[in-house]
Image (cartoon, rainbow, N blue to C red; front, side, top):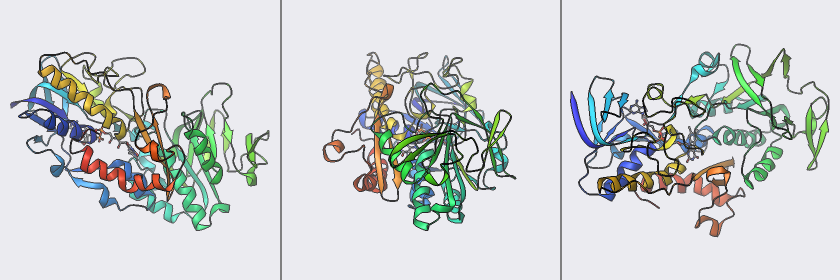
Amino acid sequence: MKKHHQIVIIGGGTGGIMVAAQLKRAKKGLDIAIIDPTETHTYQPANTLVAGGLMEYDATIRSEKKLIPSGVAWIKEFVSDIQPEQNEVGLKNGGIITYDYLVNATGIQINLDGIKGLKEAYGKNGVCSNYIDPRYTWELMQEFKGGNALFTQPTTPIKCPGAPQKIMYLMGDYIADKNFKEDTNIIFATPGTMIFGVQPFKDELENYLKKYNIKQRYGYKLVEIDGEKKEAIYERLELPNGNDSYVVNDERNAAGCMGYVWEDGVKREVQEVNSPFQMEERGTQYIIKYDMLHLAPPQSAPTWFQNTKLANQEGPNKGWMAVDKHSMQSTKFPNVFGVGDVTDLPTARTGAAIRKQAPVVVKNIVKLMDGQVADCKKYNGYSSCPLVVSHNKMLLAEFGYDGVRMSDPILSKFFNTGKASYPMWILKKYGLPFMYWNLMLKGYDF
Ligand SMILES: Cc1cc2nc3c(=O)[nH]c(=O)nc-3n(C[C@H](O)[C@H](O)[C@H](O)COP(=O)(O)OP(=O)(O)OC[C@H]3O[C@@H](n4cnc5c(N)ncnc54)[C@H](O)[C@@H]3O)c2cc1C
C-alpha cells in the first residue's frame, strides 16, 4: 500500500506536534501526516517532579489524539525505514508513505543493553531512572531510610543532561526533611568533568552540592551494575588538568578521602585513599556500593534510523541525523528537516531547544514551497534547563552554542534566573506545563 502526503512528520512527540501545529498556522490547506504509534503523550520535563513526589503522574500524560492538530492525518504505525532518494518512508506493517517534504522528529532511544547488568537490575535491586518511570524513583525514595544514594549518568549523549542531577537535589532535600542526613551519603559519579559547564549556574549549583553534602566523583564511567550485590562498577576516565576528581563536601567524612574537602567554604586537599562510602578498587575498576541507584541509561538515535541515509555514517555524531546547525535542514537531502533529540545539533537536547527549532523548520519548509531557498538560519543553539534544587526552588540555565549564556528577555527583566528562587519554582511547576500544553503544542511561536 502506498499513500502520499505533502508533508510527512515522523514522531508525534514534542517536536513533531509543535512543527505540525505551526505549519497549520503558517499556511492554509497543507496536507500533513504525523506517523507515530503511541496513544499517549508525556510531558517529560515533569518526570523530575513526579519522581520527587511533587506532581501526580497522571497530570503529565495526555491522549495523543487530542494533541494532533485538527486537519492533520495521524498514521498509527512504526516507521522502519526512510528512502530519501525516493521520498519514501517505510512502515513496519509494509506500507509506504511518500512525501514532498519530510520532518524527522523521532526522538532518542533508551538503551538498557548499553551497560552490563542494567536490564536485569532495573526496576528492582534499588535501581531506578526518571528516563523510564519516575513513579518507581519516588517509590524508592520513600523506602530509603539511609545508606548510599548513588546518582549517575552514561558517556553517551542524553536528553535533558541536567535531569540526572535534578533528582539528586530533590533527594538531598527529601533526606534533610526526613532527618536521614547523618545516615546518608549522596554520591554523584559522572563521566563529566564538572557539575555544569556554564556560569553562573555552576557556582549556584555548587552551593546546593555543599548544602546537601553531595560527594562528587568526576571522570567515572559506569560499566556494570551487579544488582544482587548492589554494586555499581566504574572505570576511570582521564580528566583534563586542573579538574577535581573528587569533591567530598562533607566534614564528617573528610578523613580517609583522596581529593578535596570543603571547610567553611574553603577547599582543602586531603591525601588518604580509603573511601568513606565503601568505594573499593579492584584492578582497573572502582566499585561503589549503593542502597538506591538513579541513573540516566545510555541513549542513541533509534537503531533503525542509524542505518538510513539521513544519519551520519561516521565520526563523533555517528547515527544522529545530520542537519545544518542553524537551519535544521538535512545536510544531504534539501526537502528533509530534523527537529529535536534525534538531530546532531551540538547543544543540550531539550523541549526548550525544540521551541526555538520548530519555527525555523516551519519557515524553511514554507520558503521551499514558495520556490525560495531554505535560508532561515536563525537557530542559535538555544536550550535551557530548569534545574530544580529543592521542593520549592529552581534556577533556569539558558545557553546557546559553545556554552554561551542566554537569557529570556522577559523573565530576566523580573528575575535573576541564575539564582535558585521560589518564583522560578512556580514557573517550573505551573508556568512551563501550561506553556507546553496550551501554547507550544498549539503552534504558537513565542
Ligand atoms: C527525566 C526528563 C526530564 C526532562 N526535563 C526537561 C526539562 O526540564 N526541560 C526541557 O525542555 N526538556 C526536558 N526533557 C527533555 C525533553 O522532554 C525532550 O528533549 C523532548 O521531549 C524531545 O522531543 P522529541 O520530539 O525530539 O522527542 P519525543 O518527544 O521523545 O518524541 C518522539 C516521538 O517519536 C515517536 N517515534 C519514535 N520512533 C518512532 C518510529 N520508528 N516511528 C514512528 N514514531 C516513532 C515516539 O513514539 C515519540 O512520540 C526531559 C526529559 C526527561 C526524560
